[in-house]
Image (cartoon, rainbow, N blue to C red; front, side, top):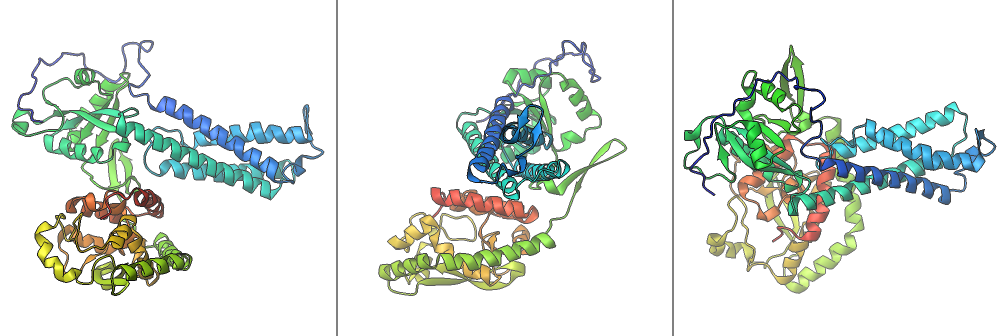
Length: 507
């Protein structure tokens, strides 16, 4: 869509705002974006049902669950009634209160990211500590099995409910646009387009740019194609009402204008419009960014990536243990696949190719063979049909792949032997994909991928796999390197299951 003309109505004259509304009684407190209100109500209901179900399971499955309450009384409650009161009233309400105080209903953490789940886990630890302390203080001989059963089952039910609610929200955002924020991007056109690209990569994030308000004048955008209408010289609040937006995103250098951002925040007070700032820090996750105010100046401090230390040692240990146990458990499946390959095409069962690993060291990657034995010789005749724009050769309908091999690729079962590489320490369960060593030294940004061990799965695989461009795949790998964490690894492993089941981008 091309926008060569811009609207130039007269600037609306409004009295300067100093952050104080004309009347405290007429001030609007409700935000324009209210999707989180019914969503939060649903979460509260799900959490309440989860805690009630956990108490019920412990009550009816453990014979000693009520033992600590025998012979005790409180007001008009005695014995079993006292247990029921605490199990079905006090404990569920306590869960909800602690979930609320830990910020699990904060709209900043709902719908995206792992922070919501981290806070739920911290709440469960707090509940166990509070129950144990209460039992000790009242000298109640509460069964440890009961505490464990209630806390673990409640945690599991709450997490399942949250994941289900989040998936429903993502579907609603992706298909209908409900539960999303309509944004106006304010800044120079290059900065606004960069933010536009970032927020639209994930429809599940619920951020829909509907307009761009450029700050560097009409000439800067003349003749440039833009995905949304572009405006300049407009009053931002009137533009918000005109396009039906509920959020203003100040992009890049526009956020550095002395006093302008503060005055815009004042102007938005009481309007129900959200204000967000998108600084020029791309592909850096929240845990690495900290705000350190100094004399009223908020400084964004960017920490270095954590690629060593206790967390990294735990990752290495989990990789080795999981790979060893996994190879033992799936050995019958590996044998069946090997037999299928031998029956499909005479030749070796495994295909081993030199790949580049951690710190540029090369190693032989293990894979089930999915192509005919003369595949490498035939590759030269197919180079012009390569559908990848990067270092890998990709074809959706590669004639070198035999029928059984195509099924292995579609289900990613051909990758299972790489558990051997993980066990040997050459690869990890999660990391950038190992690339061929044919092109020798890696130059530029691509070389940064070598700071970590390559993985069987990674952010590239769960975000589109072969459907992604080379530049996008490299960007995702670099994002993983710069923002690695154990929680992030677990998230990628969880997403890998669904990507494999849907066979998305596998060929």
